[in-house]
Image 1: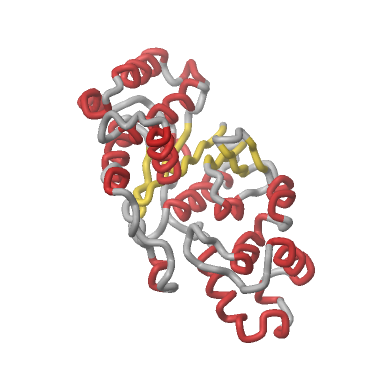
Image 2: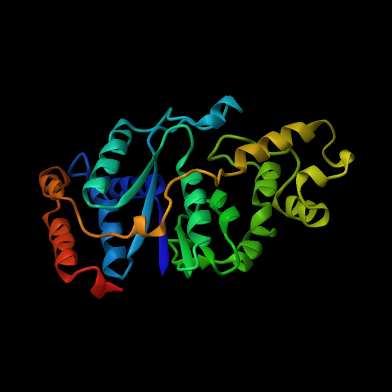
Length: 279
């Protein structure tokens, strides 16, 4: 069994700006329709168990830890207005969705990966996002990260090749180099090569000799907390809860607002084929 975990917020942004560049924003929910087409394609290609994590709101508990952490400020209203309809459309389609409020979508994905990878029925967990935060969740060949844009699948060896450190040390690495997307700068004067060298030489930041970071040690530890994903969220209890069994009756009502009759036809066809035949 393969479990597919999709970063819904990232995918919504990707589709929104992709359509904007192509000047194809014909409807208010165009990005939602694009993401649903992605999910349908995954189902058509044989996916049986999948879950989508979303940021119901952008802010999380991390905003109280660092004043400059990312917020919803600056998000285009046309994009922001599709956040909640996305969750509703996915639920109507019968897809498991985790809307995050106090935590982030990344935390839900990390928690789902931990639960799924601990199930002996699961062969591989695929986390569909290029977000470097999620690299910390990769475990050997059992939990991998997939970049949909490039088609690259990264196991633990590939993560180390990309960042220079093992997945478990991604929070240490990010604390040192910073993450502009999340709003924390890292340690001044420490680039990616130096960060990787320090982590490989000493291990986690907590193990660094005091003179390495000096007075910035506490700040580095704070950034590491920001970069460390929570994996203890009870997003599901049994992997079978992620099995797609078809849409709800209300999914048909989305045809007009999504503006994609072909999408509903594809979902209907999948339902008629039957899940068991797609194993």
